[in-house]
Amino acid sequence: MSKPQGFEKPIGVRDYLPRATRRLRRIERSVLDCMSRWGYDPIKTPTMEYYDTVGLASSTPDRKLYKLLNNRGQTLVLRSEMTAPIARVASSLLREESLPLRLSYHANVFRAIEEEAGREAEFFQTGVELVGDRSPEADAEVIALAIASMEAAGVQSFKFAMGHVGFLNGLFDESLPDRAEDQQALKERLLKRDYVGFREAAESLGLGAKQQQELEGLLRLRGDVSVCDQAAGLSRHRLAQESLEHLRSVWEALQDYGVSQHVMIDLTMIGDFSYYTGMVFEGYAAELGFPVCSGGRYDNLLKQFGRDVPSTGFALKTTRILDGVGDPADEEERPVLIVYDLKQRAQALNEAARIRSEGGAAVTILAADNNPHQPAESHRYSQVLLFTEEGNEIR
Image 1 (tube, rainbow, N blue to C red):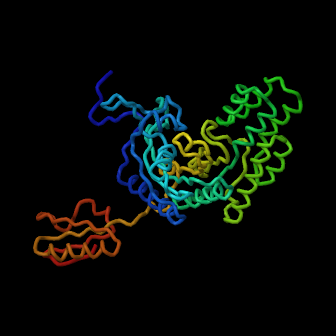
Image 2: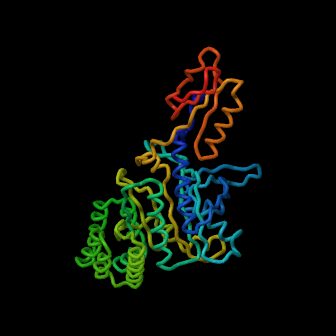
Image 3: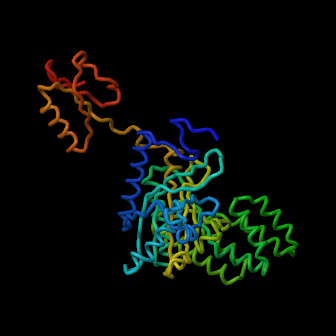
């Protein structure tokens, strides 16, 4: 293996140049401020966690975890998402806090990748976790906040899709009792949005005409809340019926939030079926063909850390928003350049301080003896103030 050049970096990581970094921070601040107004407190967790705790509890497949050994021979992981680390904190350091807990975060996370175009080994997420409330009200709150957060991030056109893991589990248990492998094969195709493969897999199961019709009917269950009424006729399984009732309640709450126009029900959604236990949702920006937000209910996760309480939440894929969505604030205010000579330095620095105290930005530079009136790259500044022997000028 050849030695990397001095300017090279590992595959899957990137440098954020000043313009991108400014925008990333603007998205972070705007979204976290939005979450704070909803009563969510910011939290930070370590970049490294123990593999035997957070690593095993994470929804990330083991092959995608970055693992390393410390000097005691213990296996650590770089955090691959934020839900499991926050579950650890909520089950330990925040155990005595009254429920529900409302926590927000912005963090970089890491995933081991294959060398494929568009995949990143390090990226940023901004999200929330609502711990200790299993009601439809809690699920509606995180969806409404996800919508508000998308708007705060500058995403102007978007749509959310909402489903329920319980409906699919109930439908499959009724149609394919005691056939766990076949159920999982169907779920995997739904997870990949492979609807042609789903039909082919369903046809290969040797089911009766009615069961086959029910499974294929699942693919048409997308739309407004009336989809729940259609779905109720596909399965009488108790879990399926309870899940549909839960979705109806969430939808009614979203109507009262005034955001239901941004949401559709998609009962083919399953999320990561080893992780989510109830309602799941994704948010799509009009400019992109893949989700920039995902979330749902995960009522069993905290149990792995010794605290059996329900939870729900979401994460904005901040890096995707940065890269793929237009920035309405792209023409941000440029700083003022103040050029001075030594005799007028105090006056110039006082002017810079005044601009900054009023919320503006100012750059100060000592004038070059040979060319005091032509500072380099003056186009980067909104104006140039000269404090020199030739007299004060504005350009």
